[in-house]
Length: 424
Ligand SMILES: Cc1cc2nc3c(=O)[nH]c(=O)nc-3n(C[C@H](O)[C@H](O)[C@H](O)COP(=O)(O)OP(=O)(O)OC[C@H]3O[C@@H](n4cnc5c(N)ncnc54)[C@H](O)[C@@H]3O)c2cc1C
Image (cartoon, rainbow, N blue to C red; front, side, top):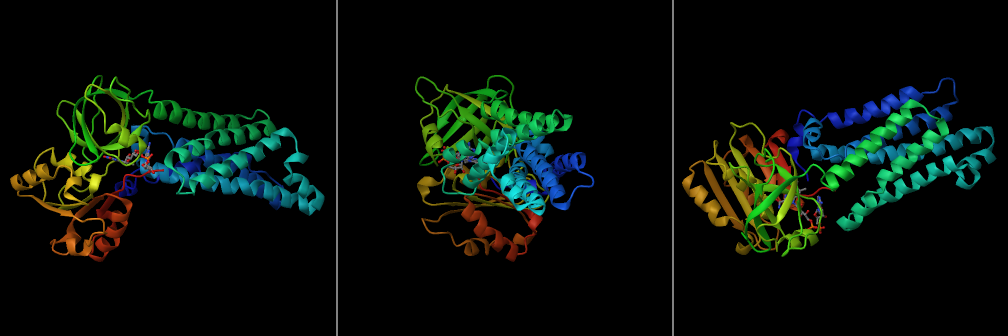
């Protein structure tokens, strides 16, 4: 996912501030006095790295209120990665700086410092944690690794951070701050696994209708069984479809933007078969149960009074159809809807009907085939692009091709919001 609105939200600075506060507190607490330079670097890098790794674990939590406070899930994920990488680099510096310190005393001691075999088990624990972190991060930087394999390895980073903290605790004795850091790391990791991945606080919904608005696409209507979520157009939920007599579920939570919001609390989700789980969902039947977490995001938020340009690529139509289903547009809106072939165009007739009935809505629907669309030709007939609030939702390639074009047409950076249905 790559949603610009998060980048301008009030909480955008919150994730880096959280990371700085954690790293800063630990460094201030542990800052040694009157130690040689390299030894000081070794200790400061260890604590700063530990603080960043704890922040990284806390930024994995998917909780709607926390996510709003921290500037949205996308900002949290961005800083989760940055803190993870920064923390790892600092922790790598830790043994090297200590070895450099030992070298100045006696070269043989430097080798001893770097050899896990020459050390006691608490130090070996630190090496195991460092290796586990290296392995987990290497997979993070390998985009070709499939999503499931990547997740399986990535999740090991949580225990690796805990190992690093136990290493600290054993070496330092029972000081209160390492314990507090362990508690924060366990809370972040535990919340993510139990509440987010197992869905302890997810709300149950029942599927009341199933339709197929386009090829390899299913739209489900969900009725709340307990509390209903308060969702606005442009937001997404994490949905886990459950097993039923006629349906075998993949059992994972996946993010889907709502494509319809009913006054009775019902929600619609439109899902394209893009991989293993979303292909399985195509055969979902009415009466199946779904558990939802959220809502998250603020993709369609923005100054209400400005004319809008919406660009949807394929399944990226979902936030826009959800907004249009709420009623006529309050401001002039042009929706450019790109799809490969007519059979792939979900809601095409519904959108044409809306455009015919709403003078504020202009629809440009275009089948582009398998080649990249000529975006310049599509945008140039549109009047006053520079003065519009622009929202783009579609494949990353579409978003990346469109951004420089919009900038050239004079659209300000703050007026561009994009979402590309992808987060790792
Ligand atoms: C904010 C957001 C909103 C989305 N809204 C919609 C929508 O309205 N309709 C729709 O059809 N699709 C939507 N998607 C995409 C949808 O989540 C993926 O297509 C789906 O999760 C793919 O899972 P899979 O097992 O079928 O595919 P896989 O082949 O396993 O994965 C394909 C890609 O999907 C992404 N993905 C897979 N599992 C997850 C997961 N649990 N969490 C996050 N990303 C994952 C990864 O980038 C992965 O590389 C949205 C994605 C995001 C991030």
